[in-house]
Image (cartoon, rainbow over all chains, first blue to last red; front, side):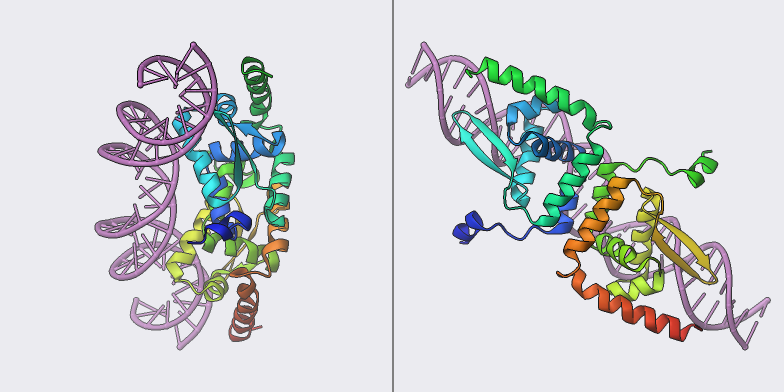
Length: 127
Length: 127
DNA sequence: AATTTATATATGAATATACGTATATAGTAA
DNA sequence: TTACTATATACGTATATTCATATATAAATT
């Protein structure tokens, strides 16, 4: 199998597949929150976006499958972040979109909600 | 009906819908060719992308429905171009993607093919 | 008017996607 | 071990998307 290769370089990010990925609002909002916040655990995203846990998990799974995000486990929590080795076009695109869409709905409401979710999570769960 | 409004300002371009639109390879290639060439008629696009006429027409219809392109009829030909009043984020995005993807497949092959298609069309059809 | 060319749309089948609900896995704590 | 929390997956269903084929519209030409 191609496991070793997959872990070091990622399968070339297919542009059309990448756009299809961002074509679902929950995933687009998730990508923008990750771009903005750096790293978020599933429960923070679930709360910030107001979606069910399986729905959040499934969409994160898609983002992972296509290679947009990577994960880090810390105890019971799994933290998601944008892959650090995204192609330039993907990174530029997210930056441009985040800049231009951050202050219009539904994205504008996500920022305060994710901040509250982070605050709550960090205070409730030690540190 | 909202005809008058629709013709002057366009219905706010929904970001997720916009991405879903570009999530289909034929439409993504089409959008990049229009960005690159400015204006193309259906037959030029059909030939450049090597797709069937109904398929090309349907995808152009989607691009039109979402408000990414506008058309101009000239005799029997209908010329498509990107809308001039796209929101900044959409325009920036297309520019960034065109710049970064132009020289990798399948986009890299489209440029020479569309040039040939344009040359043939212009020579065969007067001027 | 009849024909030809360019473009658009309708129809039906195949496939893909999203969602809710139920359940599985894995870590933590008791 | 048992119980609890966080996250992931499976399953069935509803809906959306895509395509090929056939047909419709509209301009140009004869």
